[in-house]
Amino acid sequence: MPHQAGYPQPAAMRHPTVRLAAILAILFLLGGCSQLGYYLQATKGQYRIIADREPVADLVASPDTPEPLRNRLALAERMRQFAVDRMELRGNRGFTYYTDVGRPYVVWNVVAAPAYALTPRTWCFPVAGCVAYKGYFEESAAMAEAEGLKREGLDVIVYGVSAYSTLGWFADPLLNTFIHYPEPGLAAVIFHELAHQVIYVKDDSAFNEAFATTVELALLAQWLNLHGDPAEVPALLDRQRREEKITSMVLAYRDRLAEAYLGPDRETRKPALFAEMKREYDERATRGEGTPFYDWWFGRPLNNADLLSISTYHRLVPAFQALLERTGGDFPAFFDEVRLLAELPAAERDAAVSRLMPD
Image (cartoon, rainbow, N blue to C red):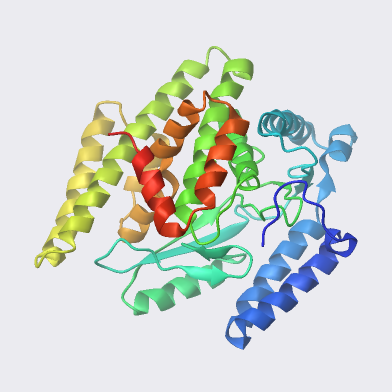
């Protein structure tokens, strides 16, 4: 079970090597031999991140740290403290270390879905519960997993991930994979991943990611208002609004595809709707309404797994934003309301979140 920030733990479990060994033993007992190879690579990958980390404070103070990295680490320290203060994450040690993993992504995620349904393949783990993706620390292993799923007739994507949360089990470090992001992107990663340590519901990826995305966007707006370059903030906010509109368009096509998959002509309707969605985006982009992310996203062959990735992170965001607005933008009050939702049985929670969605 993931621990909330600051929850006291046995002394042995505060030592990363002991904790990793304990987790591996538990996973082996619960998962059996068929999953041992996967758990071994996960444990090895996480161990290297923890073993190679260095305290941010030491790196910032050291004259041997390259100046560009020192400046980014100092900026990340300020962002982290900003989030910790507003989310009341006292005692949280997330992002107080730095690790260079020596590659462009920390993990590669595999997402899969049936060819004619928008329900993700899920993978279940003792700590995180069932999630709509499977992460690998080596790209080749992720690609091999993807090929096996494709042979089952599934729509599959593999994408690199710059950061993830261990939900408080470890003090997640800053990574080379995102430390040099532009300021808004760096802040977004820090705010999003710390939010996962506030509230996390096992077996509900859409709830967890929409909650964290809502916190990320709200904190990012506050950060930019207080610390952003006044000359850059208007353009950043405009891009955010454009991205929200395109996301709404993608989710509307998701709903149309879900309906089409119930009909007898689904084999022809699927490529037609994907092509129509691409044309609509191209028209919007021609009018200056595109974004760098969606330029990249629509520049690839798309399938159901792509739609589910967007849906998981964004479909429920309007509901959480409505709840945050209802609590006056007060994060502790908002978290209390979200915890009440998190405690509900899955079906009741889904219904309650749906009622929060704007008309």
